[in-house]
Image (tube, rainbow over all chains, first blue to last red; front, side, top):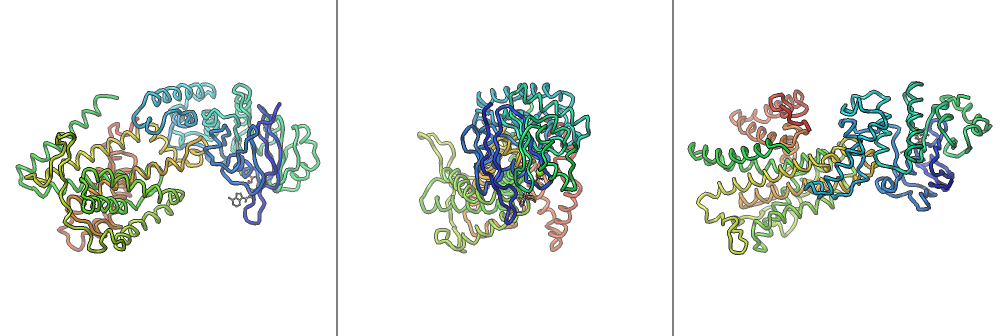
Length: 260
Length: 325
Ligand SMILES: Nc1ncnc2c1ncn2[C@@H]1O[C@H](COP(=O)(O)OP(=O)(O)O)[C@@H](O)[C@H]1O
Ligand SMILES: [Mg+2]
Protein backbone atom coordinates (compact mmCIF):
# COMPACT_ATOMS: atom_id res chain seq x y z
CA UNK A 1 0.00 0.00 0.00
CA UNK A 2 1.26 3.45 -0.91
CA UNK A 3 1.26 6.52 1.30
CA UNK A 4 -1.64 8.80 0.42
CA UNK A 5 -0.68 11.37 3.06
CA UNK A 6 2.77 12.21 4.38
CA UNK A 7 3.14 14.22 7.55
CA UNK A 8 6.66 15.56 7.42
CA UNK A 9 8.38 17.13 10.45
CA UNK A 10 5.21 19.00 11.27
CA UNK A 11 5.51 21.63 13.99
CA UNK A 12 3.09 24.15 15.43
CA UNK A 13 3.81 26.59 18.23
CA UNK A 14 1.35 28.67 20.21
CA UNK A 15 3.58 31.30 21.74
CA UNK A 16 6.02 29.37 23.90
CA UNK A 17 4.00 26.15 23.74
CA UNK A 18 4.92 23.60 21.10
CA UNK A 19 1.57 21.87 20.53
CA UNK A 20 2.88 19.72 17.69
CA UNK A 21 6.59 19.06 17.69
CA UNK A 22 8.39 17.70 14.66
CA UNK A 23 5.90 14.91 13.97
CA UNK A 24 6.34 12.66 10.92
CA UNK A 25 4.35 9.65 9.78
CA UNK A 26 2.67 8.27 6.65
CA UNK A 27 -0.95 7.40 6.13
CA UNK A 28 -1.49 4.51 3.74
CA UNK A 29 -4.19 4.45 1.11
CA UNK A 30 -7.37 2.88 2.47
CA UNK A 31 -6.30 2.32 6.06
CA UNK A 32 -7.80 3.43 9.34
CA UNK A 33 -5.15 5.23 11.32
CA UNK A 34 -5.84 6.39 14.85
CA UNK A 35 -3.99 9.15 16.64
CA UNK A 36 -4.07 8.72 20.40
CA UNK A 37 -2.51 10.49 23.32
CA UNK A 38 -3.44 12.15 26.61
CA UNK A 39 -5.54 15.32 26.72
CA UNK A 40 -3.64 18.31 25.42
CA UNK A 41 -1.15 16.10 23.56
CA UNK A 42 -1.76 17.99 20.32
CA UNK A 43 -4.07 15.62 18.46
CA UNK A 44 -6.69 18.18 17.47
CA UNK A 45 -3.96 20.62 16.53
CA UNK A 46 -2.43 17.96 14.30
CA UNK A 47 -5.77 17.46 12.52
CA UNK A 48 -6.22 21.19 12.12
CA UNK A 49 -2.79 21.44 10.53
CA UNK A 50 -3.58 18.64 8.11
CA UNK A 51 -6.87 20.29 7.10
CA UNK A 52 -5.27 23.77 6.90
CA UNK A 53 -7.46 25.19 9.65
CA UNK A 54 -4.19 26.17 11.27
CA UNK A 55 -0.97 27.22 9.62
CA UNK A 56 2.21 25.34 10.35
CA UNK A 57 5.22 26.71 12.20
CA UNK A 58 7.49 24.29 10.36
CA UNK A 59 7.28 21.15 8.28
CA UNK A 60 4.57 20.23 5.80
CA UNK A 61 1.85 17.80 4.88
CA UNK A 62 1.77 16.16 1.46
CA UNK A 63 -1.26 14.58 -0.12
CA UNK A 64 -0.32 12.28 -3.02
CA UNK A 65 3.02 14.00 -3.12
CA UNK A 66 1.56 17.51 -3.29
CA UNK A 67 1.92 19.99 -0.45
CA UNK A 68 -1.44 20.68 1.19
CA UNK A 69 -0.51 22.41 4.43
CA UNK A 70 -0.85 26.19 4.79
CA UNK A 71 -3.65 26.46 2.23
CA UNK A 72 -7.27 27.44 2.91
CA UNK A 73 -9.60 24.87 4.50
CA UNK A 74 -11.94 24.87 1.53
CA UNK A 75 -9.06 24.33 -0.88
CA UNK A 76 -7.84 21.32 1.09
CA UNK A 77 -11.40 20.01 1.30
CA UNK A 78 -11.61 20.33 -2.46
CA UNK A 79 -8.55 18.12 -2.80
CA UNK A 80 -10.33 15.43 -0.78
CA UNK A 81 -9.23 15.91 2.83
CA UNK A 82 -12.22 16.58 5.02
CA UNK A 83 -12.28 17.02 8.79
CA UNK A 84 -15.16 16.69 11.20
CA UNK A 85 -14.61 18.32 14.53
CA UNK A 86 -14.46 17.43 18.12
CA UNK A 87 -17.04 20.17 18.74
CA UNK A 88 -20.50 20.18 17.14
CA UNK A 89 -20.08 19.21 13.59
CA UNK A 90 -23.49 19.92 12.12
CA UNK A 91 -25.72 22.75 10.96
CA UNK A 92 -28.14 22.88 13.86
CA UNK A 93 -31.08 24.63 12.23
CA UNK A 94 -31.22 22.34 9.23
CA UNK A 95 -32.81 18.93 8.95
CA UNK A 96 -30.70 15.82 8.60
CA UNK A 97 -31.37 15.74 4.86
CA UNK A 98 -30.59 19.45 4.42
CA UNK A 99 -27.34 18.95 6.30
CA UNK A 100 -26.34 16.17 3.96
CA UNK A 101 -27.45 18.00 0.83
CA UNK A 102 -25.55 21.17 1.67
CA UNK A 103 -22.45 19.08 2.37
CA UNK A 104 -22.41 18.09 -1.30
CA UNK A 105 -21.08 21.53 -2.08
CA UNK A 106 -17.70 20.19 -3.20
CA UNK A 107 -19.38 18.36 -6.03
CA UNK A 108 -21.32 21.35 -7.34
CA UNK A 109 -20.56 22.35 -10.90
CA UNK A 110 -22.88 25.33 -11.36
CA UNK A 111 -21.71 28.85 -10.55
CA UNK A 112 -23.20 31.11 -7.90
CA UNK A 113 -24.97 33.03 -10.67
CA UNK A 114 -26.19 29.71 -12.04
CA UNK A 115 -27.79 28.96 -8.70
CA UNK A 116 -29.37 32.40 -8.62
CA UNK A 117 -30.96 32.08 -12.05
CA UNK A 118 -31.64 28.36 -11.69
CA UNK A 119 -29.52 27.27 -14.66
CA UNK A 120 -29.81 23.79 -16.12
CA UNK A 121 -26.53 22.82 -14.46
CA UNK A 122 -27.79 24.11 -11.11
CA UNK A 123 -30.90 21.98 -11.42
CA UNK A 124 -28.84 18.95 -12.41
CA UNK A 125 -26.63 19.55 -9.35
CA UNK A 126 -29.64 19.74 -7.06
CA UNK A 127 -31.04 16.52 -8.43
CA UNK A 128 -27.70 14.73 -8.07
CA UNK A 129 -27.26 15.98 -4.52
CA UNK A 130 -30.77 14.96 -3.49
CA UNK A 131 -30.25 11.48 -4.92
CA UNK A 132 -26.85 11.04 -3.34
CA UNK A 133 -28.20 12.35 0.00
CA UNK A 134 -30.90 9.70 -0.11
CA UNK A 135 -28.25 7.05 -0.75
CA UNK A 136 -26.21 8.24 2.22
CA UNK A 137 -29.32 8.27 4.40
CA UNK A 138 -29.98 4.67 3.34
CA UNK A 139 -26.37 3.67 3.83
CA UNK A 140 -26.28 5.06 7.36
CA UNK A 141 -29.82 3.89 8.11
CA UNK A 142 -31.05 7.38 8.94
CA UNK A 143 -34.43 7.27 7.19
CA UNK A 144 -36.24 7.78 10.51
CA UNK A 145 -34.56 11.09 11.24
CA UNK A 146 -34.14 12.41 7.70
CA UNK A 147 -36.56 15.29 8.17
CA UNK A 148 -35.80 15.98 11.81
CA UNK A 149 -34.08 19.23 12.73
CA UNK A 150 -30.49 18.48 13.70
CA UNK A 151 -30.85 20.43 16.93
CA UNK A 152 -33.46 17.89 18.06
CA UNK A 153 -31.25 14.84 17.49
CA UNK A 154 -29.69 12.84 20.33
CA UNK A 155 -25.91 12.69 20.63
CA UNK A 156 -25.52 9.34 18.87
CA UNK A 157 -27.42 10.51 15.82
CA UNK A 158 -25.44 13.74 15.74
CA UNK A 159 -22.19 11.84 15.44
CA UNK A 160 -23.64 9.72 12.67
CA UNK A 161 -24.82 12.88 10.95
CA UNK A 162 -21.30 14.26 11.27
CA UNK A 163 -20.05 11.19 9.38
CA UNK A 164 -22.85 11.57 6.84
CA UNK A 165 -21.75 15.15 6.20
CA UNK A 166 -18.20 13.93 5.79
CA UNK A 167 -19.33 11.26 3.33
CA UNK A 168 -21.37 13.72 1.30
CA UNK A 169 -18.20 15.60 0.46
CA UNK A 170 -16.95 12.39 -1.17
CA UNK A 171 -13.59 12.60 0.58
CA UNK A 172 -10.47 10.58 -0.01
CA UNK A 173 -9.35 11.10 3.56
CA UNK A 174 -11.80 11.63 6.39
CA UNK A 175 -10.40 13.09 9.60
CA UNK A 176 -12.66 12.26 12.54
CA UNK A 177 -11.90 14.06 15.79
CA UNK A 178 -13.33 12.06 18.68
CA UNK A 179 -16.23 10.50 16.79
CA UNK A 180 -17.20 8.29 19.76
CA UNK A 181 -17.09 10.98 22.45
CA UNK A 182 -20.12 10.93 24.73
CA UNK A 183 -21.36 7.58 23.45
CA UNK A 184 -22.16 4.48 25.44
CA UNK A 185 -20.66 1.11 24.60
CA UNK A 186 -23.38 -0.02 22.19
CA UNK A 187 -23.46 3.27 20.34
CA UNK A 188 -19.69 3.22 20.07
CA UNK A 189 -19.68 -0.26 18.60
CA UNK A 190 -22.32 0.77 16.06
CA UNK A 191 -20.17 3.74 15.08
CA UNK A 192 -17.11 1.52 14.82
CA UNK A 193 -19.01 -0.67 12.35
CA UNK A 194 -20.14 2.43 10.51
CA UNK A 195 -16.64 3.84 10.15
CA UNK A 196 -15.42 0.41 9.04
CA UNK A 197 -18.07 0.19 6.35
CA UNK A 198 -17.24 3.72 5.19
CA UNK A 199 -13.66 2.62 4.77
CA UNK A 200 -14.39 -0.77 3.16
CA UNK A 201 -17.34 0.03 0.93
CA UNK A 202 -16.47 3.56 -0.04
CA UNK A 203 -12.70 3.16 -0.08
CA UNK A 204 -12.19 6.17 2.17
CA UNK A 205 -8.96 6.49 4.12
CA UNK A 206 -9.84 7.34 7.72
CA UNK A 207 -7.78 9.11 10.37
CA UNK A 208 -9.30 9.42 13.77
CA UNK A 209 -8.55 10.82 17.18
CA UNK A 210 -10.17 8.89 19.99
CA UNK A 211 -9.94 8.27 23.71
CA UNK A 212 -12.00 5.12 23.84
CA UNK A 213 -9.16 2.57 23.81
CA UNK A 214 -11.17 -0.60 23.22
CA UNK A 215 -12.76 1.08 20.21
CA UNK A 216 -9.41 2.33 18.94
CA UNK A 217 -7.87 -1.12 19.29
CA UNK A 218 -10.79 -2.67 17.46
CA UNK A 219 -11.05 -0.23 14.60
CA UNK A 220 -7.47 0.75 13.78
CA UNK A 221 -5.14 -0.74 11.23
CA UNK A 222 -2.37 1.34 12.71
CA UNK A 223 -1.98 3.77 15.59
CA UNK A 224 0.18 6.84 16.10
CA UNK A 225 0.73 7.85 19.72
CA UNK A 226 1.63 11.41 20.64
CA UNK A 227 2.45 12.92 23.99
CA UNK A 228 3.31 16.58 24.71
CA UNK A 229 3.26 17.25 20.98
CA UNK A 230 5.77 14.56 20.11
CA UNK A 231 5.26 11.23 18.43
CA UNK A 232 6.26 8.51 20.87
CA UNK A 233 5.14 5.42 19.03
CA UNK A 234 3.63 4.13 15.80
CA UNK A 235 2.43 0.66 14.91
CA UNK A 236 -0.34 -1.90 14.85
CA UNK A 237 -2.72 -2.13 17.83
CA UNK A 238 -0.81 -5.15 19.11
CA UNK A 239 2.51 -3.33 18.92
CA UNK A 240 1.13 -0.24 20.62
CA UNK A 241 -0.41 -2.27 23.43
CA UNK A 242 2.95 -3.69 24.38
CA UNK A 243 4.97 -0.51 23.86
CA UNK A 244 6.70 0.60 27.07
CA UNK A 245 6.76 4.28 26.19
CA UNK A 246 3.02 4.27 25.56
CA UNK A 247 2.23 2.52 28.80
CA UNK A 248 4.43 4.98 30.62
CA UNK A 249 2.80 7.99 28.99
CA UNK A 250 -0.63 6.76 29.89
CA UNK A 251 0.25 5.74 33.44
CA UNK A 252 1.83 9.15 33.93
CA UNK A 253 -1.37 11.02 33.14
CA UNK A 254 -4.33 11.02 35.46
CA UNK A 255 -7.25 11.52 33.14
CA UNK A 256 -6.68 8.73 30.66
CA UNK A 257 -6.47 5.00 30.93
CA UNK A 258 -5.22 3.03 28.00
CA UNK A 259 -7.56 0.19 28.90
CA UNK A 260 -5.28 -2.76 28.44
CA UNK B 1 -43.20 26.64 -8.27
CA UNK B 2 -46.88 27.13 -7.52
CA UNK B 3 -49.25 29.75 -8.89
CA UNK B 4 -49.67 31.42 -5.52
CA UNK B 5 -46.39 33.31 -5.57
CA UNK B 6 -46.78 35.08 -8.94
CA UNK B 7 -50.37 35.83 -7.89
CA UNK B 8 -49.11 37.36 -4.67
CA UNK B 9 -46.67 39.56 -6.56
CA UNK B 10 -49.41 40.69 -8.95
CA UNK B 11 -51.74 41.53 -6.05
CA UNK B 12 -48.92 43.42 -4.34
CA UNK B 13 -48.16 45.36 -7.52
CA UNK B 14 -51.84 46.18 -8.01
CA UNK B 15 -52.06 47.46 -4.45
CA UNK B 16 -48.98 49.66 -4.59
CA UNK B 17 -49.34 50.87 -8.18
CA UNK B 18 -53.13 51.23 -8.47
CA UNK B 19 -54.87 51.12 -5.13
CA UNK B 20 -52.47 53.34 -3.19
CA UNK B 21 -52.29 56.12 -5.85
CA UNK B 22 -56.09 55.99 -6.12
CA UNK B 23 -56.50 56.32 -2.34
CA UNK B 24 -54.04 59.19 -2.28
CA UNK B 25 -55.89 60.81 -5.14
CA UNK B 26 -59.33 60.67 -3.53
CA UNK B 27 -58.04 61.60 -0.08
CA UNK B 28 -55.83 64.38 -1.39
CA UNK B 29 -52.94 63.35 0.92
CA UNK B 30 -50.22 63.98 -1.66
CA UNK B 31 -47.54 64.02 1.05
CA UNK B 32 -48.12 60.29 1.39
CA UNK B 33 -46.25 59.69 -1.85
CA UNK B 34 -43.09 60.96 -0.26
CA UNK B 35 -43.70 58.91 2.88
CA UNK B 36 -44.29 55.70 0.96
CA UNK B 37 -41.39 56.38 -1.39
CA UNK B 38 -39.16 56.73 1.65
CA UNK B 39 -40.45 53.49 3.12
CA UNK B 40 -39.79 51.69 -0.16
CA UNK B 41 -36.23 53.01 -0.40
CA UNK B 42 -35.46 52.44 3.27
CA UNK B 43 -36.70 48.90 2.96
CA UNK B 44 -34.31 48.33 0.05
CA UNK B 45 -31.39 49.40 2.25
CA UNK B 46 -32.77 47.24 5.06
CA UNK B 47 -33.03 44.28 2.71
CA UNK B 48 -29.27 44.56 2.24
CA UNK B 49 -28.70 44.57 5.98
CA UNK B 50 -30.94 41.54 6.26
CA UNK B 51 -28.74 39.65 3.81
CA UNK B 52 -25.67 40.25 5.97
CA UNK B 53 -27.67 39.01 8.94
CA UNK B 54 -28.37 35.94 6.85
CA UNK B 55 -24.67 35.06 6.73
CA UNK B 56 -24.46 35.62 10.48
CA UNK B 57 -23.12 39.17 10.66
CA UNK B 58 -24.75 42.07 12.49
CA UNK B 59 -24.42 44.96 10.09
CA UNK B 60 -24.84 48.44 11.61
CA UNK B 61 -23.06 50.19 8.77
CA UNK B 62 -25.53 50.37 5.92
CA UNK B 63 -25.77 54.15 6.36
CA UNK B 64 -22.22 54.38 5.03
CA UNK B 65 -23.25 52.80 1.75
CA UNK B 66 -26.43 54.82 1.37
CA UNK B 67 -24.28 57.91 1.83
CA UNK B 68 -21.61 56.73 -0.59
CA UNK B 69 -24.28 55.76 -3.13
CA UNK B 70 -25.94 59.13 -2.74
CA UNK B 71 -22.71 61.03 -3.28
CA UNK B 72 -21.65 58.79 -6.15
CA UNK B 73 -24.84 59.47 -8.04
CA UNK B 74 -24.86 63.19 -7.16
CA UNK B 75 -21.28 63.64 -8.34
CA UNK B 76 -21.81 61.70 -11.55
CA UNK B 77 -24.95 63.70 -12.35
CA UNK B 78 -23.64 67.16 -11.45
CA UNK B 79 -19.97 66.90 -12.41
CA UNK B 80 -20.15 64.56 -15.41
CA UNK B 81 -23.69 65.32 -16.50
CA UNK B 82 -24.58 61.66 -16.54
CA UNK B 83 -28.14 60.44 -16.73
CA UNK B 84 -29.46 59.60 -13.27
CA UNK B 85 -30.73 56.22 -14.42
CA UNK B 86 -27.20 55.28 -15.40
CA UNK B 87 -25.74 56.58 -12.16
CA UNK B 88 -28.20 54.47 -10.18
CA UNK B 89 -26.65 51.08 -10.98
CA UNK B 90 -23.21 52.70 -10.99
CA UNK B 91 -23.77 53.99 -7.45
CA UNK B 92 -24.71 50.45 -6.46
CA UNK B 93 -21.61 49.04 -8.15
CA UNK B 94 -19.31 51.61 -6.58
CA UNK B 95 -20.70 50.71 -3.17
CA UNK B 96 -20.30 47.02 -3.93
CA UNK B 97 -16.66 47.57 -4.93
CA UNK B 98 -15.90 49.63 -1.84
CA UNK B 99 -17.62 47.04 0.32
CA UNK B 100 -15.40 44.32 -1.16
CA UNK B 101 -12.30 46.26 -0.16
CA UNK B 102 -13.67 46.98 3.30
CA UNK B 103 -15.33 43.59 3.68
CA UNK B 104 -12.27 41.47 2.92
CA UNK B 105 -10.59 42.36 6.21
CA UNK B 106 -13.58 43.11 8.45
CA UNK B 107 -15.75 40.15 7.50
CA UNK B 108 -13.27 37.91 9.27
CA UNK B 109 -14.58 39.43 12.47
CA UNK B 110 -17.66 37.98 14.06
CA UNK B 111 -20.41 38.86 16.45
CA UNK B 112 -20.05 42.06 18.37
CA UNK B 113 -16.64 42.81 16.84
CA UNK B 114 -18.00 42.99 13.33
CA UNK B 115 -20.97 44.99 14.57
CA UNK B 116 -18.72 47.55 16.26
CA UNK B 117 -16.57 48.03 13.18
CA UNK B 118 -19.59 48.52 10.93
CA UNK B 119 -21.01 51.00 13.44
CA UNK B 120 -17.90 53.10 12.93
CA UNK B 121 -18.14 52.88 9.12
CA UNK B 122 -21.06 55.30 8.88
CA UNK B 123 -19.15 57.89 10.85
CA UNK B 124 -16.06 57.35 8.72
CA UNK B 125 -18.17 57.89 5.59
CA UNK B 126 -19.61 61.10 7.04
CA UNK B 127 -16.18 62.45 8.00
CA UNK B 128 -14.80 61.54 4.59
CA UNK B 129 -17.64 63.39 2.90
CA UNK B 130 -16.84 66.41 5.09
CA UNK B 131 -13.17 66.31 4.20
CA UNK B 132 -13.04 65.54 0.48
CA UNK B 133 -13.07 68.39 -2.05
CA UNK B 134 -15.21 66.48 -4.51
CA UNK B 135 -18.05 66.08 -2.00
CA UNK B 136 -17.94 69.81 -1.26
CA UNK B 137 -17.60 69.44 2.52
CA UNK B 138 -20.37 70.50 4.85
CA UNK B 139 -22.11 72.49 2.11
CA UNK B 140 -22.87 69.24 0.34
CA UNK B 141 -24.10 68.99 -3.22
CA UNK B 142 -27.31 70.86 -3.91
CA UNK B 143 -29.56 71.65 -6.86
CA UNK B 144 -29.12 68.20 -8.29
CA UNK B 145 -31.31 68.01 -11.40
CA UNK B 146 -34.28 65.67 -11.54
CA UNK B 147 -33.82 62.37 -13.35
CA UNK B 148 -33.86 63.01 -17.07
CA UNK B 149 -35.33 60.92 -19.82
CA UNK B 150 -34.00 57.44 -20.41
CA UNK B 151 -34.44 56.18 -23.93
CA UNK B 152 -33.10 53.40 -26.10
CA UNK B 153 -33.02 53.91 -29.86
CA UNK B 154 -35.42 56.82 -29.59
CA UNK B 155 -37.96 54.90 -27.54
CA UNK B 156 -38.61 56.55 -24.20
CA UNK B 157 -38.34 54.04 -21.36
CA UNK B 158 -38.53 56.51 -18.51
CA UNK B 159 -39.79 60.07 -19.09
CA UNK B 160 -37.99 63.21 -17.94
CA UNK B 161 -39.11 63.67 -14.32
CA UNK B 162 -38.60 67.44 -14.60
CA UNK B 163 -41.34 67.79 -17.19
CA UNK B 164 -43.83 65.55 -15.38
CA UNK B 165 -46.79 67.21 -13.77
CA UNK B 166 -46.48 64.88 -10.78
CA UNK B 167 -42.85 63.85 -10.18
CA UNK B 168 -43.76 62.57 -6.72
CA UNK B 169 -45.90 59.88 -8.25
CA UNK B 170 -43.10 59.05 -10.68
CA UNK B 171 -40.57 58.70 -7.85
CA UNK B 172 -43.05 56.59 -5.95
CA UNK B 173 -43.57 54.22 -8.86
CA UNK B 174 -39.85 53.98 -9.60
CA UNK B 175 -39.02 53.26 -5.95
CA UNK B 176 -41.72 50.65 -5.57
CA UNK B 177 -40.59 48.86 -8.71
CA UNK B 178 -37.01 48.88 -7.44
CA UNK B 179 -38.17 47.54 -4.11
CA UNK B 180 -40.08 44.71 -5.73
CA UNK B 181 -37.04 43.83 -7.87
CA UNK B 182 -34.73 43.84 -4.84
CA UNK B 183 -37.01 41.66 -2.78
CA UNK B 184 -37.51 39.31 -5.71
CA UNK B 185 -33.73 38.98 -5.96
CA UNK B 186 -33.47 38.46 -2.22
CA UNK B 187 -36.18 35.83 -2.33
CA UNK B 188 -34.38 34.07 -5.14
CA UNK B 189 -31.06 34.14 -3.26
CA UNK B 190 -32.59 32.78 -0.08
CA UNK B 191 -34.50 30.03 -1.81
CA UNK B 192 -31.70 28.85 -4.04
CA UNK B 193 -28.62 26.91 -3.04
CA UNK B 194 -26.94 30.27 -2.47
CA UNK B 195 -29.27 30.87 0.46
CA UNK B 196 -28.57 27.44 1.88
CA UNK B 197 -24.86 28.18 1.69
CA UNK B 198 -25.45 31.49 3.48
CA UNK B 199 -27.39 29.67 6.17
CA UNK B 200 -24.55 27.19 6.54
CA UNK B 201 -22.24 30.15 7.20
CA UNK B 202 -24.63 31.53 9.75
CA UNK B 203 -24.85 28.26 11.62
CA UNK B 204 -21.33 26.90 11.55
CA UNK B 205 -18.63 28.69 9.62
CA UNK B 206 -15.90 26.11 10.34
CA UNK B 207 -17.99 23.24 9.13
CA UNK B 208 -18.98 25.23 6.10
CA UNK B 209 -15.31 25.67 5.20
CA UNK B 210 -14.55 22.03 5.79
CA UNK B 211 -17.25 20.90 3.37
CA UNK B 212 -15.49 23.04 0.81
CA UNK B 213 -17.41 26.31 0.89
CA UNK B 214 -15.21 29.28 0.11
CA UNK B 215 -16.50 31.12 3.14
CA UNK B 216 -14.44 34.28 2.62
CA UNK B 217 -15.77 34.63 -0.93
CA UNK B 218 -19.35 33.96 0.05
CA UNK B 219 -19.22 36.47 2.89
CA UNK B 220 -17.84 39.16 0.62
CA UNK B 221 -20.39 38.30 -2.07
CA UNK B 222 -23.31 38.67 0.34
CA UNK B 223 -21.86 41.84 1.81
CA UNK B 224 -21.36 43.42 -1.60
CA UNK B 225 -24.92 42.62 -2.65
CA UNK B 226 -26.02 44.16 0.61
CA UNK B 227 -23.99 47.29 -0.05
CA UNK B 228 -25.25 47.47 -3.63
CA UNK B 229 -28.77 47.72 -2.26
CA UNK B 230 -27.66 50.40 0.17
CA UNK B 231 -26.05 52.30 -2.69
CA UNK B 232 -29.08 52.39 -4.97
CA UNK B 233 -31.36 53.32 -2.08
CA UNK B 234 -29.05 56.20 -1.16
CA UNK B 235 -28.76 57.37 -4.78
CA UNK B 236 -32.55 57.43 -5.14
CA UNK B 237 -33.01 59.38 -1.90
CA UNK B 238 -30.53 61.98 -3.03
CA UNK B 239 -32.23 62.32 -6.37
CA UNK B 240 -35.61 62.89 -4.70
CA UNK B 241 -34.33 65.47 -2.26
CA UNK B 242 -32.09 66.89 -5.01
CA UNK B 243 -29.35 67.39 -2.46
CA UNK B 244 -26.86 65.43 -0.36
CA UNK B 245 -24.96 66.43 2.77
CA UNK B 246 -22.50 64.54 4.97
CA UNK B 247 -25.34 64.29 7.47
CA UNK B 248 -27.85 62.90 4.97
CA UNK B 249 -27.30 59.44 6.41
CA UNK B 250 -26.05 59.00 9.93
CA UNK B 251 -25.34 56.35 12.50
CA UNK B 252 -28.95 56.50 13.61
CA UNK B 253 -30.01 55.51 10.09
CA UNK B 254 -27.65 52.55 10.18
CA UNK B 255 -29.13 51.52 13.49
CA UNK B 256 -32.63 51.88 12.09
CA UNK B 257 -31.84 49.68 9.09
CA UNK B 258 -30.72 47.01 11.51
CA UNK B 259 -33.77 47.48 13.74
CA UNK B 260 -36.05 47.15 10.71
CA UNK B 261 -34.61 43.70 10.13
CA UNK B 262 -34.86 42.67 13.77
CA UNK B 263 -38.39 43.91 14.07
CA UNK B 264 -39.70 42.35 10.88
CA UNK B 265 -37.93 39.06 11.45
CA UNK B 266 -34.54 37.73 10.49
CA UNK B 267 -35.99 34.48 9.24
CA UNK B 268 -38.29 36.03 6.66
CA UNK B 269 -37.46 37.67 3.37
CA UNK B 270 -40.28 40.18 3.79
CA UNK B 271 -39.18 40.90 7.36
CA UNK B 272 -37.17 44.05 6.62
CA UNK B 273 -39.98 45.45 4.47
CA UNK B 274 -42.57 45.05 7.19
CA UNK B 275 -40.14 46.24 9.84
CA UNK B 276 -39.41 49.41 7.88
CA UNK B 277 -43.10 50.12 7.42
CA UNK B 278 -43.95 49.59 11.09
CA UNK B 279 -40.97 51.52 12.44
CA UNK B 280 -41.42 54.43 10.05
CA UNK B 281 -45.09 54.88 10.82
CA UNK B 282 -44.62 54.02 14.47
CA UNK B 283 -42.13 56.86 14.81
CA UNK B 284 -44.46 59.27 13.02
CA UNK B 285 -47.49 58.27 15.06
CA UNK B 286 -45.62 58.94 18.29
CA UNK B 287 -44.80 62.44 17.08
CA UNK B 288 -47.68 63.93 19.06
CA UNK B 289 -46.02 62.78 22.27
CA UNK B 290 -43.35 65.43 21.84
CA UNK B 291 -40.31 64.94 24.00
CA UNK B 292 -41.47 61.49 25.12
CA UNK B 293 -41.41 60.26 21.53
CA UNK B 294 -37.99 58.64 21.70
CA UNK B 295 -38.51 57.20 25.17
CA UNK B 296 -41.78 55.49 24.32
CA UNK B 297 -40.55 54.42 20.91
CA UNK B 298 -37.44 52.75 22.35
CA UNK B 299 -39.34 51.09 25.17
CA UNK B 300 -41.85 49.67 22.73
CA UNK B 301 -39.04 48.35 20.55
CA UNK B 302 -37.42 46.62 23.49
CA UNK B 303 -40.70 45.07 24.58
CA UNK B 304 -41.46 43.94 21.05
CA UNK B 305 -38.09 42.25 20.71
CA UNK B 306 -38.47 40.52 24.04
CA UNK B 307 -41.90 39.23 23.14
CA UNK B 308 -41.15 38.45 19.52
CA UNK B 309 -37.46 37.63 19.30
CA UNK B 310 -38.04 36.26 15.82
CA UNK B 311 -39.76 39.38 14.56
CA UNK B 312 -43.26 40.44 13.67
CA UNK B 313 -43.51 37.92 10.87
CA UNK B 314 -43.20 35.11 13.38
CA UNK B 315 -46.69 36.01 14.62
CA UNK B 316 -49.18 33.24 13.93
CA UNK B 317 -51.26 35.74 11.99
CA UNK B 318 -48.64 35.94 9.25
CA UNK B 319 -47.29 32.51 9.64
CA UNK B 320 -49.59 30.29 7.66
CA UNK B 321 -46.93 28.24 5.93
CA UNK B 322 -44.74 31.30 5.49
CA UNK B 323 -41.28 29.88 6.15
CA UNK B 324 -42.15 26.32 5.11
CA UNK B 325 -39.92 25.16 2.36
N1 LIG C 1 -5.55 28.13 19.34
C1 LIG C 1 -4.72 27.81 20.36
N2 LIG C 1 -4.02 28.78 20.99
C2 LIG C 1 -3.20 28.46 22.00
N3 LIG C 1 -2.97 27.23 22.44
C3 LIG C 1 -3.64 26.21 21.86
C4 LIG C 1 -4.55 26.46 20.78
N4 LIG C 1 -5.08 25.28 20.38
C5 LIG C 1 -4.52 24.35 21.17
N5 LIG C 1 -3.66 24.89 22.05
C6 LIG C 1 -2.85 24.17 23.04
O1 LIG C 1 -2.14 23.18 22.35
C7 LIG C 1 -2.10 21.99 23.11
C8 LIG C 1 -2.68 20.86 22.30
O2 LIG C 1 -4.07 21.03 22.15
P1 LIG C 1 -4.97 20.02 21.33
O3 LIG C 1 -4.38 19.78 20.03
O4 LIG C 1 -6.37 20.54 21.37
O5 LIG C 1 -4.88 18.72 22.24
P2 LIG C 1 -5.70 17.36 22.14
O6 LIG C 1 -6.67 17.46 21.02
O7 LIG C 1 -4.67 16.32 21.96
O8 LIG C 1 -6.41 17.21 23.47
C9 LIG C 1 -2.86 22.26 24.39
O9 LIG C 1 -1.93 22.58 25.40
C10 LIG C 1 -3.70 23.44 24.05
O10 LIG C 1 -3.94 24.24 25.19
MG1 LIG D 1 -8.75 17.42 20.93
